[in-house]
Image (tube, rainbow, N blue to C red; front, side):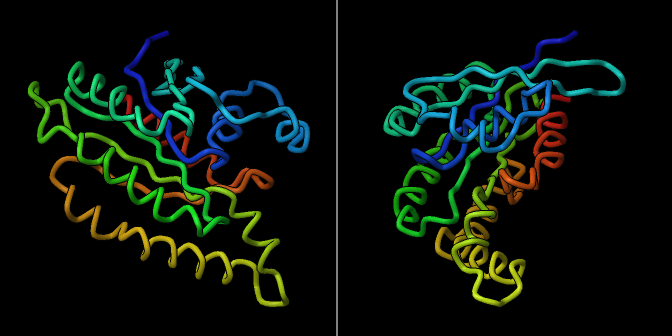
Length: 204
């Protein structure tokens, strides 16, 4: 079993970071309602070890969840990683069911990206940034007035991407980081396979 470099997971308070990481880490099936009811907002830092099978070799990937209340200090932890490994491995979780969070998310996301190293000194590669659009299931419930759910989610997701200028951010930082985006629904486990695959590839 190998140990690989840390991945940091950040996002606003209540964005769904803890539930996402619990589901990625869990070794047994857990009822979704039990998982939600037993999860409280993170104060400080949570540590998770997620299995990532690479070519038949079992790796334990360390993921550190930084609580939303620490948002003003995220850069301190991320800067430390950038200085030690000359790259950043970041999962940014965005709650797309709450449009009022857009200004806060935009501010903190940009501050995180400003820390991206221009290039790794040992030429091991670019940084990796995964943007997770969380609570897709909540959007479906809130906007289900007869229109197809998937269409509602796609419209809301594209609205968030536009407000946050995600396409511009990807362009501006294209030489320093690989960007990927995925939608996640807690209820249906949507996106978990893609997220776990990103974790595996990030540490390959």
